Image (cartoon, rainbow, N blue to C red):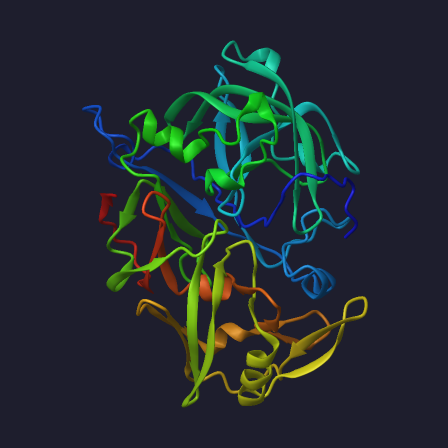
Length: 397
């Protein structure tokens, strides 16, 4: 992938929580009717595409603007309405950035028109649109970038509206759809905007306008073969996990927590580094020294892949019995079946689900086995072993 635009502003690590909303409003899962804070729930559908080995080898992230538009593994995207006339757009929900930006109807995609497939925004059709006449620019760690103009407008999520929400109307982009960033305000791409270093992004506005009580959200990716899952602003579904949610301290603005060790086949491997919980990444990435030891246990081997890259591959018929346990600093532990680490390729080989990186990233093959509650007010991420069930017991946070 080639970056189309280079900006000098802060580079954000794109952590896409793309969640495809299933449409109908569930009354008990939106802000309470008596006006007190509640929660906003989004169901999402899962779209699965083949792994792009070149993207895996070079980015460790989703390949969102390759000419073939092939994403790494599963993707998720949420339907959000913008403007007084509720213009519906499908946006990536991203915990690794903090800005909401939408694709303008006259935007230039770099290259092609793929950025308009998921809906475009016409500011002239919205009576509540207010341009702030300030430039917006952002670049993500995978090389994609966007630029446009800062503005304010009404934003509606599953029937719940917030007014005068700051967002960017993008006129040029190398990303295939708009993004709803929900991370800490400290990672906002504001620069010198009106002399301010931060502003109220969507989760903060939801709280300030009384739609949710706490700047928090929970994630349920569901089972490896499931076609849907749930993301909840201001709430937690207590039916979707077993045991207790264990609070782990957030260690950076990128929403990382400390991974202490990994247990596999009778041996414990020390890690003691920050780990990013990233549904925008398909695989799990660990320090090279740890990966080499785990690969020896699992029978995975390092081979050339992509354009000069090296990746671990494993026999497609390898024994996948047993599991791997991830242990975190405050006592949380998540068990992942070893069957999650075999990814068949079109050429008959199988990619191993754990790869080398200086940054620890726990991707979808880990997150499908965890229930997560991100509390940005408390600066914690609570984590528990997931429970796959159609039952629901949602409470506000």
